[in-house]
Amino acid sequence: MKPFLRPTWAEISLPALRANLERLRSRLASRTKLMFVVKGDAYGHGALACSRLAQKSGAADWLGVSSVEEGSLLRDNGIRLPILVLGSLYPFESFRAAAFYNLVPTVASLESARRLAGMMRRMGRRISCHLKVETGMGRIGMSPGAALGALEFLSSRPEVSVGGIYTHFSCAETNRQFTLLQLDRFKAVLAAAAARGWKTGLRHAANSAAALGHPSTRLDMVRPGLAAYGLMDGFQPVLTLKTKIVFIKTVKPGTPIGYGAAYRARRRTRVATVPIGYADGFSRGLSNKGEALVAGTRCPVAGVVSMDMTMLDVTRARGCRVGDEVVLIGRSGAEEISARDVARKLGAIPYEVACGISARVPRTALS
Image 1 (tube, rainbow, N blue to C red):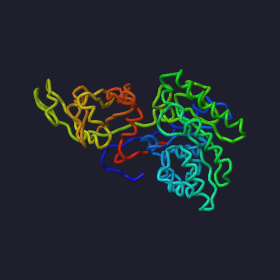
Image 2 (cartoon, one colour; image 1 turned 90 degrees about the vertical axis):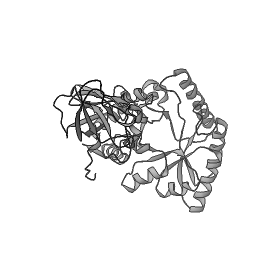
Image 3 (cartoon, helix red, strand yellow; image 1 turned 135 degrees about the horizontal axis):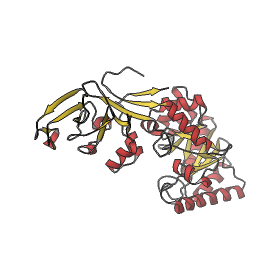
Image 4 (cartoon, rainbow, N blue to C red; image 1 turned 180 degrees about the vertical axis):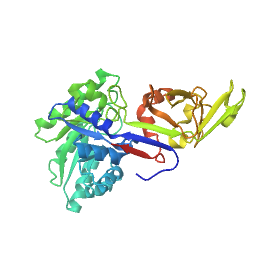
């Protein structure tokens, strides 16, 4: 972690992350593996630090990323756990890089199965892949018939082994009936493959919501993200977003603050400026409706969030000064603002809030 001067940063609690992963593990059968999903820079939490924790502690059996680039970064920094590239690899030349970095690619079409086999044959390499079956998400993946065709093709290709097969639920949080329908569709593919004697390797389908709410979906492996990062009830938040007050002024009633004069003081008001804005991932949608915590006191956003700075009404935070810490996501005293709270104000989801914290905000890992 390089030192930083601009006083805006995110703290990542590795003990909280480990506790969440261990709690997830405790809900699983001993034979069920856990894939820790670290795509999107670990949902904004810092993929390297989170992956190192998972590897050192043994809290995860696999890691999941979205691209070869994400996987290669982990390999270049000493991560040895099996890594599945969950995204569809295109152009197909990406298979070459996946093999070089010992990543497990997703095969989401019969054409990609053929291209992968051809690439490995020319390279003189063997590779393991996982097949993606479309059961109702409508994103990537093969129809049941195409998946069986890919299994038939790959069963005769010595350069490619099928190490796993998976699907993805579209509404595990909200629709039990449709989730179980997707599971039935997936199991029908598994049964058809077994009847033909084709090996499918690890069978997996469950994200956090499915793994916790629908035990029958756990199969051979689960793929948590939301719960691991403490972005759902019952798990410890891993990320805290902080800044510091860099300027304070007292203004008279009627004084405009910020772009468009969208805020005018209704009374004699103390206004603090903090060095965080929408370029950092503190959304402009929080203008005049977001909050921050100053010494355990809730302070509303005053005016429009600008690119690099935001103003707060700190009148109730008596005695606050330049240099005082401000919590935008996390706990201060008896008060807490969660990523879910921020998401509700924005009409978003906690994933989006955490992933939206930009790369210019340093992440500092707390052991």
